[in-house]
Length: 166
Image 1: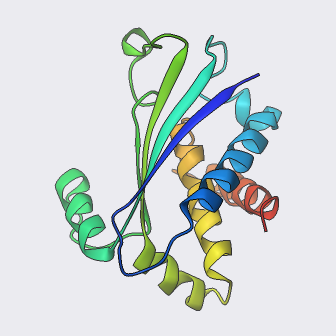
Image 2: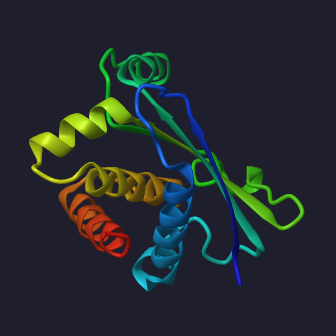
Image 3: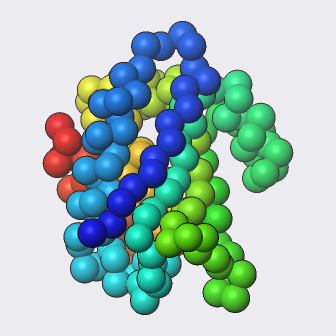
């Protein structure tokens, strides 16, 4: 049975965040994604031996995510999520597992953008948050959306994943 070490850092002080609830829900979402053969068998974890999966979630504001977006992607705009998929994006020979723990990376989310998009999409804040966090977890597992087929797969999978916690 896989253990999860999910660290949540809330740098966005303008909004009260229930970090325990987010932790419990993202753990459920991650377990659900791991249970999906189409996800797990095509992920960076297929054929990897580990006991624990680790990743970080940073909740921030538009200004900070815009700074990060510019620094790492040369895009001078705020975005909803940036994912640093450390394990998936590393060459096979550079991937390491320390003491049975694999560090997938980091998901950075703009709470401002989540609020904006929830209003635009006429959904709840939580619905948008878990949709975007599911997106981030898929990126950590090595999924991307460079073509229509991959994009559609991610959107469908994100919708299924968020539905288990709403």
